[in-house]
Length: 355
Image (cartoon, rainbow, N blue to C red; front, side, top):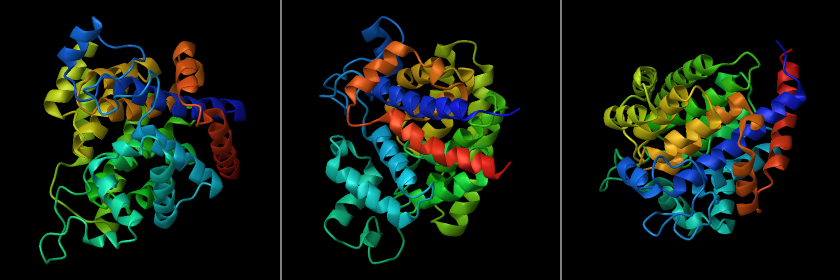
């Protein structure tokens, strides 16, 4: 089975768009509980709404993305400018540019914010989160989900190549999220997106790739980053897939994934849960982001990751046109079709090189 360049472009655009839709849909429910969401919207939220005042994205318009996918779009541009490769230094410079330019910079996550603020002052950030006079850093530092929420473009330039996706994902983790937990979570999402671009990919193969990426990321984290106490991403991805297959309704899937794994900002909560929601939705782009937007807590990040996987598998043609128009019009600073063309140039060449 072969994929045409047009089909590859459709899937890459689908991932960029669906990730943004998940981010924007989840921005209206972030920090809420599922019950509160259902009560406020008369059922599960299935459209783009203006974030209320008790969310981190208050002030955004319906359809506007947050720091999550705006950072991903900056990463996509950096990949295009660097022929599909990123070093830790290049990503650091890109993140600083995002922090200077983006209107979403005020909503930076707990790990990224501390690092960026130190870089902006010209400081050596190695002192951030250090315990006393030692060289040890706080175990909780660098285990949030920032590295995974923005990593999907890495998978998009490495179709079917899990190892290359994980190596580049590692480079994006080291400046801010230098723990095996963060590397494992980022590699899980990058590997799943990379697999989703194969012409023969299906929900099962993408889920398996997420698990393989999580395992490889854990190895890379052990070799190149800090090893900290905490839950195993591979084990939680396994559990998330099992729970998704067990659930008989969206409501049951949300309850199981929140109850057994979690829906917070921790990488070990949100990345595996995003994989589980993607599996439960059967890879459907809308259903994948609806799950993320309604699970509560860190909804925008979870929906963005689940959406990145689903969009890469099913493509832009599976995206509801009305939601796409709202997303496009609410984020005029991002040319997603242009980004998709640039990423496709790299991905297509790499596919051709592999025969």
